[in-house]
Length: 237
Length: 80
Image 1 (spheres, chains in turn green, purple):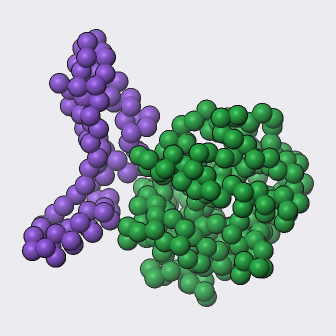
Image 2 (cartoon, rainbow over the protein chains, first blue to last red):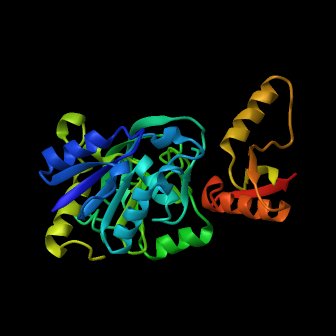
Image 3 (cartoon, chains in turn blue, brown):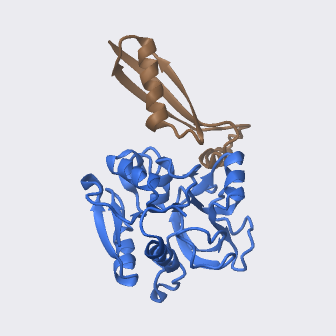
């Protein structure tokens, strides 16, 4: 089993994500410079956080149109797992891996804080180790993280159980106050139609060791590993 | 033949424009109350195309492929 963490110019959570995968979860992981492309097949690709291309034009817009993303879209279309975290989520939405988009926060400033998330669906390769309705504590750090989609798309995501996480308070209540960026229906993480892509604004890699104050996020990576161990590569759930 | 193209990208009607809201608030603080304010982004591009129709066609593709995000944006193209 092998994971890839793709580095774009301006990625800055690439090594944190690598550390969690390689050192905490113990899975073979390559840091892949975007210009080198995917030189081999991977079981999972992680698009890490950061500020690819300086967030020019729109966060993630330019990175989403690089050749490596064409390869990653192909990997996803074949059922391969893709996890987009923060800027990686923005890149994933710009590349069309999930519907909707992440745009300027309702209060237009950068927010860096721990938030609570409610696990909305455990029926995915990313969330299988959680309990449905479980409340986890994970940090966010973004200025363009407000999830926007048409009402039809949001309704479809709800119907198909493709909202992985919602922002909530510590008791799991979905309130306006606990929705830090004004996302539609408190949505913090979205699954693709095939459920093999998760785009999420919160940073699970920053909450994967007790020394960081929370290790609630590590189950995402461990869920992916367990899924690949059980089903092998490229089998959509 | 060279054409000057102006592309304006704006949020779709009804989309929340947090930046505009902050600017409107700041203007009000300076004694300039406004009834409405929205922001847009303007690109001035010079390109080679056979005629104005072809230039508009290419500019449209630029919007669809990169400059605009169809989820939130609408765009207008002017060709000189």
